[in-house]
Every structure is written in C-alpha cells, then in structure tokens.
Image (tube, rainbow over all chains, first blue to last red; front, side, top):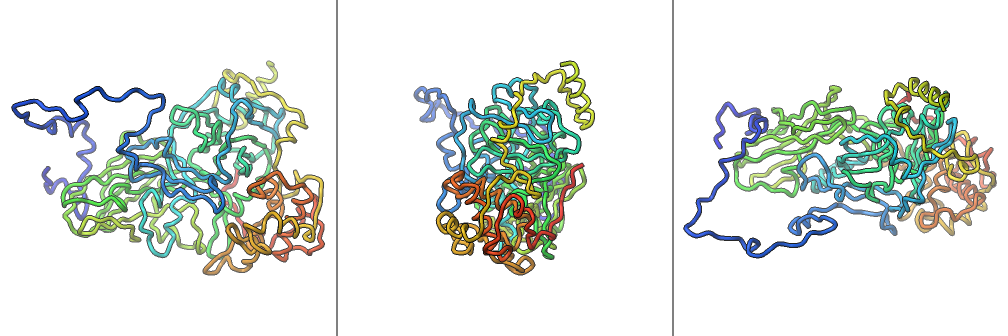
Amino acid sequence: MSTEKSDVAAGNGLLGRRIFLKAGVAGGATLLTAQAAGVEREQWMKFPGGPMSENGAPSAYEAHVKRIGVASQPGTTGTGVSRTPLQHLNGLITPSRLHFERHHSGIPDIDPDAHRLVIHGMVDRPLSFSLEALARYPMVSRIQFLECSGNSGGSIAPEPAQVSVGNMHGLVAASEWGGVPLSVLLEEAGVKRGAKWIIADGADAAIMSRSVPLDKIMDDAIVALYQNGERLRPGNGYPMRLFLPGWEGNACVKWLRTIKVMSEPAMTKDETSKYSDLNEEGIAQLFTFPMGVKSLITSPSHGLSLGPAGIYQLSGIAWSGSGKIKRVEVSADGGSSWADAALDEHVLPKCLTRFRSAWNWDGGPAVIMSRATDEAGNVQPTRTAVLNGRANGAFYHYNGIQAWAVSDAGEVSNVYA
Amino acid sequence: MFMRKALLSATCVVFGTGIAFAADNPELGEELTAAQVAAVDFTIMPDGDGLPEGSGTAVAGREVYNQHCLACHGENGAGGVNDVLAGGHGSLTGPRPQKTVGSYWPYATTVFDYIRRAMPFQTPDSLSNDETYAVTAYVLFVNDIIAEDADMNADTLPQVKMPNRDNFVWGYMPK
C-alpha cells in the first residue's frame, strides 16, 4: 500500500479516511496462494468436525477474552465490579457474557414466576405486573450503551496506571435492550398531578435504590427484559431492570421490584453519599445523570504492542449520553494535529460508535489519542479540563481524552498528555 | 373502560410522550390493596415519610453496632475492611476528602433507610426497627451530631440536621 502525500490527513503518519469509506476495498486482491502441484489439507480438514451444542461458546483459542478486573469487597464474592475487555472487542455490540457488572450485594437468584413489578405512590391505582403480563405489552428495542459513572475513575490518579484499556475504562458496554416503555405502565397506573420523581428499588439483598426524574422516565425509560435478543442475564438484572438511555448506570436499577412515584427524590445512600460529585470548594452535585461525550482508542492500547513500522489501524469507541456521535478526531502527534476518523456505518443515539483511522507508523515514538464530538456540540475535554475544579479523589463522570504512548519498540503505555 | 381510556389519553397528553399506549396497552396490571403496597414499600423520604414505628438511642445502638457492624466498620465507626462511618469533618476541601456519614451525608433519614435495606451486609432483614433506630442513633452520635441519650424515632430523626446538609446542589432539575 502506498502512502502518497495526498493520503496524509494529519501529522506523524495519520492517513485519510478514504479506505474506510469505500465498501469492499479489501476484497479480491488478497485471495492468494498460488497452488502447489498437489493439493493439501490442514489438520482440521481431515476428519469431520465437532458436534452442535445447546449453548454456544467462543473458540477455545479465545479463552483469554473474558471479563477482567473482577474485584469484590472484602469478605464478599458478588459485591464489586467486573469489566468489559475492550481491548479484545471490535464493533459496537458487547457480547452479553462480557458486559461489565457492578453489584452492591451480589446477584440475586430470582424466580421469574414469583417476581412482580409494583408501581405505587402518587398514582390513581397501584399496580402489580408479572413477567408474563409484561410480555404482552408493546415492546421497544434500542441499541444503546450503559456506562457506570465510576468508569475511568482510575484516570484521576497522579501517575497514569499501566493497565489495559478494559481495566481502566471497561465499565461501559453496548447492547440491544428490549423492553416495555415505563411510560405505558405509569399511564396505566395513572400518575397524579405534582409527581416529579420515581424511586426505583431492586430485588437484591441491598434493595438498591435510586430516584429518577419523572420527565426522563416518560421520555425514553424502559423496563428492560431482553439483552441482545435473549432474556437479561442474571448479572444484568434478570428478569427485569430499569434502563435509562444515556444516563449513569447506577440509576438503571437491576432486578427492578418497585417504582414509587413521588414529588421529591428520596435521597438514597447511593445518590447522596456515593454517586455525587464533590468540587474543590466542598460543594457536591447531586443527580449528575447524563454520561458525557467520550472516546477511547482501544487498539492499539496498553498491552497491545505494535510490530514493525508500517500501516496500522487505530480503532476505538466513542459515545455520548446526549445523542449521536457526530465526529471523532484522532492524533498521532500528542494532539498537535488531528484528523477525522471514519465512523462505522451504525451511528446510533446514546450508543457506542466504532471509529477507525489508518496510521502509517514510522517506527518512532508517538502519542496517539482520540477526541469525540456529539450531535449536541459537546466536545470531549482534556484530562486537565475534567479535573479542573474537582475535589481530590472525585472520580465519577470522568470523560477526559485518553492518550497512549507508542515507544520505538512498539510498546504502548498509558500517558497523560 | 371507555372513561378510563379517555383519562389515560389525557395523561398521555400531559406528558407528551407520543406513545400510542391506549390502543395497544393490554392493561394487565393487577390493582393492589394498601396493605399489599405497604409490604413492598421501603422508601423513606428526607421529611420522614415512610419511617416505621419504633425508637432507639445511641446507648442501645452501641451494643447493636458492636455485635453486627464493628467487624467491617471498626470501633466507633472508624472504618475497617469497609466504609469509614465517622470523622472526616472539615476534610472535604483538603488533600484527602473523607466522605463519612458525619462529614458528607446530607440527610439523617438516609442512614436509617440504608441500614434497613442493606445492613448488616450478610444478614439484612435481621434487625428490628428499634435496633435500626438505635444503630442509626449510634452512627449519628459517634459523629457528634446527636447526644448519646437522644431518642431517634419517626418524629425526631428527620429533624436532625446533618452538618454538611447545605453543601449540595442539584445537577438536574426535573421538568
């Protein structure tokens, strides 16, 4: 592949998007191998292959692709996080088995026939819904991201941690979420005048609880029953969870049990003492719901080394709680110059968007980074800008630009740039 | 039924959702009695709405705490394998902000609410309402917020003003 001058889009070898914008460009030419005189078979072509199975599983050669950073509170096994291995994924859908987890008191073993969703409080008629009943309601399906607001919190550390992109930023995932609009159920119950909030409780042992503004609930919240076409996995709320497109994951209460309609928020433990944002003057902000515009180069990234100099694909994900991703720019010279990356075909609102950029690495040291802009005009800030004015240790809603340094040996490390 | 549909449509207009629910809503929700609702309603509001009967002081709470909480939260709420509950006053603007019940939490009702929902961690649902009030009182007492003999109940707990109460702003105002 030649790198004519006209292909160069920004400094230090970033190439234009042309190659990604043309369909089928990679076809044809690579169907290689002049055949030798005789025909040959690989070992696995010499006998019939394996059987079918009732549950699919990844190739045994991909066994290393699993959730990472699994950590539970001392003395517990299900109270903490597991992270999505972003460095091994390519596309926008996160396989359900790899979707990150954050639980506050383990994963409850819920009998779906015994579970009920109760809507009460400021309603004309308190109602109870079985899973069987909900299955008959009009359902919607959307492909959208879910991000824990504590995601990327390690990026506030004074020195950049040398961990994988999944380990640092893997509390985000995208799925097809299918379920019943909560507005339909609330309208059936009859919301009373003066109602402004709902209090959502989960059926876990901690009865995790969050207050959510009613306008968001009536706008696009769903009671999610399906994830990527199958019933929710237990770690993601089976048999039902609240899903609030674009808003912080903690508020998307799993194992949803009750919805209480109220005029005020309940000021639960999670929304006050945990998921609140303290500034340097000692003022804390409650209810920081939408997730900010953000992007990450996932390949190359820490732990994924480059080989010899030449053309590589910079690939990553971008998302915003405010809508669609409009633009992703990449830099290979530490932010001195930027080029537009190509966006994959599916650019969906409040969803991960895959971006790609071709990079002709000259074999020298380089700093690569990405910067996303959403359709509302929000531009991903620098790390310095994110931390400006924050209290020490305030780590929620971190969406700063992630930089990776590539050494002349091709090794990739986490840097603040 | 006709009346109800009309009512539902009106609600729909109020919220402007644009979802045509009336036509395809199978209306399968089962109406609950007040007692059935009460059985699943854990919500406690900052004004005390939802607080149950019962009461307790820090004197009684110390026993409950030492038996059920100390192993994770340390002596007098000083912290252990899990969250520090006491102290940290004045630390929020310093190099190491310590967000304890006393230094950070805005509402006293949240303490009772969270203990009733989730604590003790391995055996939630094991404390009586009196014990929950008592251990709530103890956590407030070790933060120098109430006296050791102050009785916490549905009337007094919402009146406790937390030291950091006025240092919170809202990032989202409901429309």
